[in-house]
Image 1 (cartoon, rainbow, N blue to C red):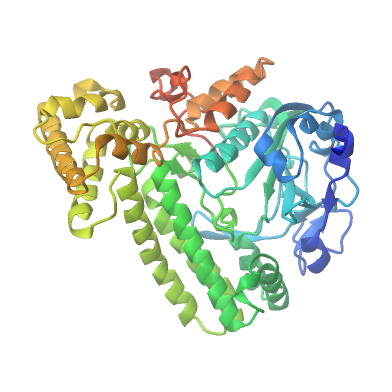
Image 2 (cartoon, one colour):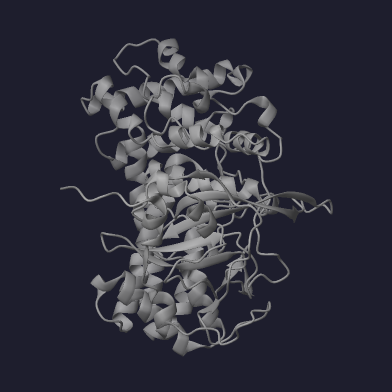
Length: 537
């Protein structure tokens, strides 16, 4: 006899919470939570603000399944009240974490969850713990001069991108829901002294934990070494138990594991053309996850110096091509914080140095996969990769489309140059940039590439399948997210649902949805939200 399916409210109310972070780590003793410096604590307890009229815009069925919820559960009135912060379920323990960080290369001191409130750690039927967090749910002690709220445009971008990255196979925090609050929020989008009211919204995020490099940096910088040790021991015992009981040697092995996971994440970002935009140390996860989606973007034309962040426009510290080096710099700052626990800098320094090898090995293997090669062969492939990456920026070339259509290039011997070039035409933004000289260089590279493929004895059909499995056809281009924002502002949510559906299968052809795979339209080149974005985006 099958078990009866509980009504949506019952399924949601049955969520079980086991709040290890707040149970085992020191809490802020101050209860009224004014904005302030918080000492001697890993977190502060704080309640979400009440929202006027919560309304669900979208939910992710895959993220909901992590909590044993269905889409029907997500569309209940109780769901909207819980994940807008208006109702707490039994067992929830709302709190904001205390951490610091380096921002744009400079120590910023205490930062903390300024607009994020963790509701608690939900435990699913498989025994997995998922920290449930509301972003945009109101002020905390760490909000400084801000209101702790979020607006639709930033929230929708984070919701869609979190799930898009998951389906692309990139380690990431998850997004359960996007809810409009019914409250206006004032924002100065361009920091130019012209604030406007925008619709408020809240994203519910899920992760094993939201512990960042900056959690450890703050306690080390303040000399709060007992709390630093408590947090490190908790983290290892809870999330890295395979390393053994905490000790100086285990701290070092743990850090090395973080270095390896971070290197792997950077390889993923470069594979799909993703630019995070604000790789401060407080935005780096100890789990090797992509975390805190703000002014991110995907490369449209292949430009390694491109950054989507207006704040970074001058220095380009966080541009596409510098991300792996910045990740290593950030790891070095985490190593500085952990050194008092290890008692020696040498093993930590070695792991920071080894990061380069882990990244380069991963990058070379990834590039071989992007080109459909059977395996990476250093002598042949390093110059092949190098010359391709020199060619791509010479003319405005869409990175996503180039690699996708490279799979269609015929590789048999004796193919005329125009036949090899033809499948790539769709990747170029300005055909007039394709001078005779550039066509010649590209044709010569394609001949070398074809010869390399023949060396593997790969049929073109097999190569195409291999390449389509790692080179997505669909990514969340900024202009697509902006179109969805525009529609929601008009009260129309269907484009959000359609984008979420398309992004579930980014490597598939999906006939009838080709419009979501096209190049950035010219109107989007300089439109706010479609090119560069501010940190408030």
